[in-house]
Picture 1: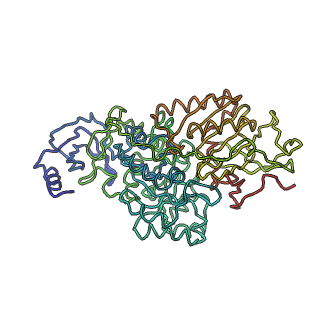
Picture 2 (picture 1 turned 90 degrees about the horizontal axis):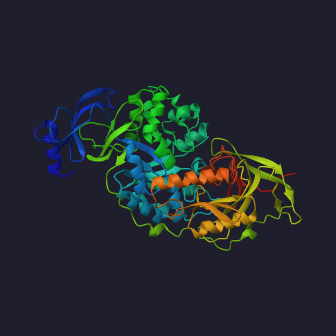
Length: 578
């Protein structure tokens, strides 16, 4: 801030100079005192000068609405929305989102630091303030091939960038607990710069949780029970209550929020698709759920604003108070949290659910062409099994956790799988798509329900190789080739023809189209997955499949290197022990 800007702010606060904008006739939610007061909000430049009685060059009548600080999503992956940073801003801002803490873990695993560069530049094209953390686990595990390897030396430059708050969710919790040397080097890059380290510690307890926490872990968004939440709160961690498109932990965890611990509780999305945003909302939806579950509205708003700002060291925002950023949301009530208007840094950016600024798309050429597959054919799907008893990935309802089961299958004379249409068991494969290794690993999937054709994605957390599932090697081969041709995304095939597709040219992870277009495409994909391919109606066909390669979520998953038992952190053979 320049001296003359400071003088103007002080003069405006004191009433000597008219405010640039005055919002009148509103009820101001004070997240410091917990009170709601009636008064004007005076804005000077991009900051709040004061609350009281003010005059301004521009006057906005709030019509009795509640004025809350702009909402801060404390952990989100933009890539999981399948749209660009500019487009996620257009979608979130009308729902009251003014700041997000974004972890570009997905695109950096595909494109390396140039993926981070793209995300940071693209974020300049939206009014939404996108704060990034540097992905800490690239690759997420050593048990798959990613598009890049980023160790401590490669982190030294980006961790110093002004727009980088610190290290993103540290998923390699065994590495921290065991004090692995290379992991300690990564932690030190953040510590030496005085920057934060975000957490990811599902299921850790006791001394191992203490070991994880004392490494400097700030927060955890992976709690699924009140017991896990309380365990982490007692060790000083912030808890991010997650409500995404796939993982719904908010309601269960709200049972553990009390007046004593609420200041350490935040709200986050993690992964949120356009369909969810367009039909349910963003943090406004989180707030609705909080109040429905009996939480005080002001406490809920504090969790979405001040708590997040304090957690991540954003000292300039999170409250409506003199000297704070003029990030303001007008709400029609504190029950449904319908958003009327949104200001970011003093600029009106949304009104009546419409995003007002011009969208400035950034060039995507640096992150195109990321699907690099060599030496691929259906011959790679041959398994040459010696035993008909196999280990199987069993999809469990309602999440991304799987179970390891065994099954007996039919084999032909060459030891190849012969699918029984009466049995819900099919072949699945992961095709490496970054380094041109030619790696293809095959396994078996139960509970997906596919009866015709094949589905192929270039979204397969966390390294985002191609994952494909189908009723025959021929259908799977056709789907993979169609996916390569369109530079990634989603493909559904049946009888050797593409019946639905969604190209995702931005690193094979994101569309360059609008959120509404993505929503329509996903709706069509879901409908045909159920009606044409026969996938189980209680299975989300895209999101479920893309997590079948995530080798940090129990119990068993498939990477391009083989079938992986997450409980033992080791590869296991497809053939089960007799």
